[in-house]
Length: 121
Image 1 (spheres, rainbow, N blue to C red):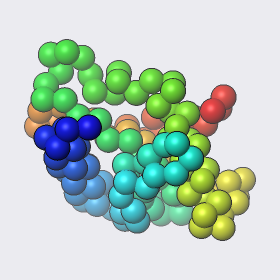
Image 2: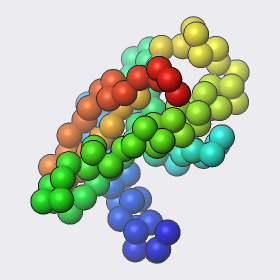
Image 3: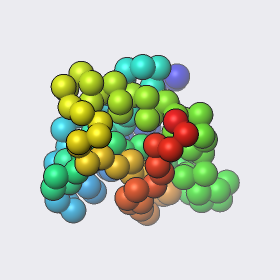
């Protein structure tokens, strides 16, 4: 990953974190990596643990940023989330969790709660 790509990603993650915090979520961790995957943001929304994928594009001219999340990517996020739960000593069956996406296209920020399920991952 080039330095400029990483810089754009970090900026998008900061924008997403601020956006979510403005809506009452508490950011617990950034860039959690485990089990061959990475989670951009881990947040708390009330009693729910939220694993957030951040996607950004300069515009929607080439499509919506959400369209870039493949089933392979979703699987990696889910595996990393499960590893996070284990590392924290949390039971996946007893902790309310969801997978959100924050899509940034130009200046527009969109939050998609419950963007995908863990089924089949």
